[in-house]
Image (cartoon, rainbow over the protein chains, first blue to last red):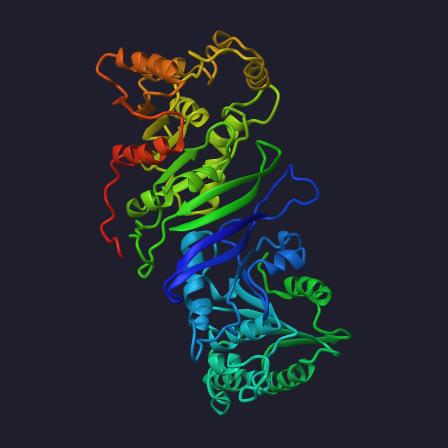
Length: 263
Length: 270
């Protein structure tokens, strides 16, 4: 695998951006790992960080390059600050950036990155789990399969202290706007899932995992039941654990094995 | 333009290698700079560092990204330690890495043109000699060579200090340049081969400061090319006030970017 640190400009955000990218590389003389580079274009996993983190965090807290090497898949790790993968009420257009501009930029930089829906995936943890699920439900033409680890999948619940004098100040208001306007909006993934199911369009495959001690566990159970009721192709798993990297390090390997990567 | 720091594995070197890449990007809202990109594949400048430096140095000492931006030119900046871009007698195969392997790896990652007319190689000091060696030993791969502050062979005017002798042994296995005749290290031999076999002839831009300690080697190279009837390499020699310093290279790398005469990108956006 090759690791690329990319500095570039986003027209959507109007500012410079960074991302880390792992590209498939077939090696013979490198010790302990060979990698796989298939014929033609390779699939891609957009791997999203959580609140407090950035594009470097998956590299630093897990062995994602080693885990991905057997699958011949590229991994794109962007950074989106505290933006909840949302076109913010007051702030940056992170959703447009992540769902439209970034895939276009990656395909222009890396011509062997597949642009097919069935080769394009998203996964993430916590806020990034919400982002990955949003990619699948709100941009189903772009993403064929998505995975949420310990995802904050219920924006209404996550943002419920919006009007309080909480430590977060105006954070939730800046992201989602007035709390009573989240329901039914593009940021309400329960509503978005219903709309997609009703549209008759192709639905993404979905993987979810959450620890049973996680403060987001209840949200994940509700989303599981919701997606099952709507007929989504959902693989749901839970196990003892809370909101920690030792679980995400393990579960991202489960996600890679679950992804519908064509051999 | 995007700046990409690439870490990958080189089979030629048998170890991990680092390379910085500037990639044309159409961006409309970035302040203070025009950005341009051509169609699907970009022309490429392979830009080589000197002894003591690495893949980051052109970015840190010049504004190469800004100079390349309006041309829609990709710039690939590898690192070769102190190898003199040679397949070392005692060390890695850096000539093979730069001349053969790196272009394949970069083209497998990025949309870089493989056409000869879109490929240029330049460098300073050790990289100036390196780009002459690589460009003239592989004339079918490069349209132009930009040699800065070097001769095609850096020997005249430099005393064979113990340190330099040790580096020559490490690099070539000998301190005798004449023992390298007939190898890729024999740049004037490569020139003769191009003429004898009527191979494609890269254009050559050669620039050095009047106060540079390598001036004597550069003059030897100048005299050689200027003695060739009809100037078959469109050889262009310049001397400007200056020494072996980044002020010189920051200014005069821009001369080379004019010399390669890329057709301007029509849809430059600000």
